[in-house]
Structure formats: C-alpha cells, structure tokens
Image (cartoon, rainbow, N blue to C red; front, side, top):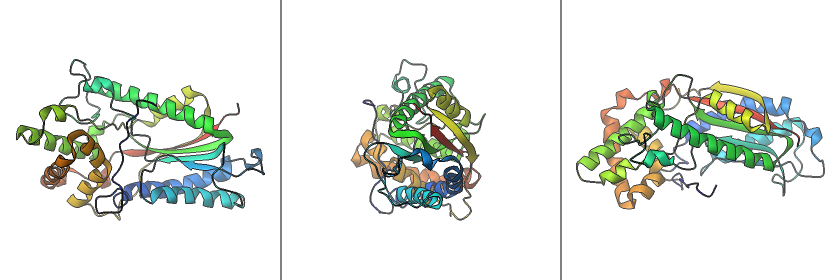
Length: 313
C-alpha cells in the first residue's frame, strides 16, 4: 500500500529494545504452538503440493528479535512431524504456509479523519482508539478493514491452493472497549503525560493533538466477517485465548520498557529525537504514580487465533 507508514520497533539488544521487551509476544507464540501443530497435522494436505518443489514458509509480522525464528521453527517442527523436511525452506514462487503473530492489529496509517480538526472523528484529548467515541471507533475500524483486506488479497496471491495461513492478533471480547484493557490504561497515562508536558510548554500542544497510535483491536467477529467477505480462504479454526502471565514480574520498569520498545520510533518520528528521553521520563513517573491502576495479569484483552486455508482457484 503506497500510503502505508512504517513504525519500527526499537532494534538491537539493549535494555529498551523490542528483543528484550517482547516476552508477552513470546507467550502468545507458546500458547499458539499447540494449535498450530494440530492445524498442520489435521488440515494441511501435503499431497496437493509438488514433491519436486520446496515447501515454503513465510512469517509476516516480527519486526526484530528472536520471536520470528521461534515461530518459524515451531512450524518447521510441526511439518517435520507430518513429513520429513528435506527441501529448501523458502521457495521462488508460491508459499505453502504463512504465519503472522502479534502484527495485524497495527494499521498502515492513522485514519485521516482522526487528524482532521473539522471531523466528528477528531481525536483531541486521546492518543488511541478508546472505543468510547463512536466516530473515532468507526474510523479506526474502517482502516483496519481496508488493511486486513489488502493483507488477505496479497497473501492469497502468494499462497498455493490448499496452503494454510495462521494468524494470531490482539483483539477484544464483544462489548469491551480498549479503554478497559490494561493497554488502554497505559495509553491513557502516556497521553496524559504528553498533555501535561504541553501544558508546561515542554512540547508543542499541536503536536500532541496530532499524535495517535495506529493500532486497532478488533473483535473475533469483525475479523471473521472480513475473511468471509474476502472469499479467498476457508476458516479451518478460530480460537480466542489469553496467555498465562504468572511468570512475568510486573513493575514500573517492565511497563515503561514494554511501551518504549514498541513506540519509541513512533514518538521519535512525531516529536523529534531530542524529546524522546523527556517524554518517556515523564511517562515513567506517571506509571509509578498510577501503578496500582494497571494489572496486565487480569487484562481483558484477548488474542484471536485463525487457521485459514486457501481455496483452489
């Protein structure tokens, strides 16, 4: 998509990097692994693929860090259990299995209406889709639908008939707004930090008004409807799950590092490199002041798991 924006995670392996702060995404992969194994064992028909061609796998989603290798290795292991894996991993033309985890809730761009002062969807006072303002939610939902349709159409061209696509993305239960999730509360604190800094004259109020996070959490029904309307895939399996976070030690540092790893690039691009440390310093103080209000272990956000099969042309 020509209008798509690039919002990279923090690279490298430093303390603030995505690689060091993506343990939640790793847990999502761990939970999805068993479902992927079952899908490959029961739904993938190796007989329809040409024995002379390599079995091809692609992972769409991971920006940096080890999670993409873990995801692909899980798939290789599952395929090897079904049939010896003796050919090249990546093909020259078609794909047989596609995997995407913790990526498709990212939008290609912030909806234009959100940034228009004259639009009913003008999102002043918030930096994300809270789910509390109908016009804002409608604009974000429409952008997600457009992006998801583009993703499905592109992957359908790459995936061989009968091939599988595994999708895991962040979502919401029916009737729950993003503002009710732990992530929503964290975004609220980041937004209030920016507003406070603008009130102090430390950053531009106009810049704050125009800052929105291009992320949308759909319901499973929303995604299912888009897939069915697309008409290029059958839905072989759909699950909703939440990973067990018992072993994660929640702290102010954990929350701030998690957010900085994901959104530092977005903040840097919008406000300028010279403001990044100040913004996250204020944000850390906000998290410390309101730590009791956030509980990631009792989060109402869910993860949505789909196994899709490419229809024959």
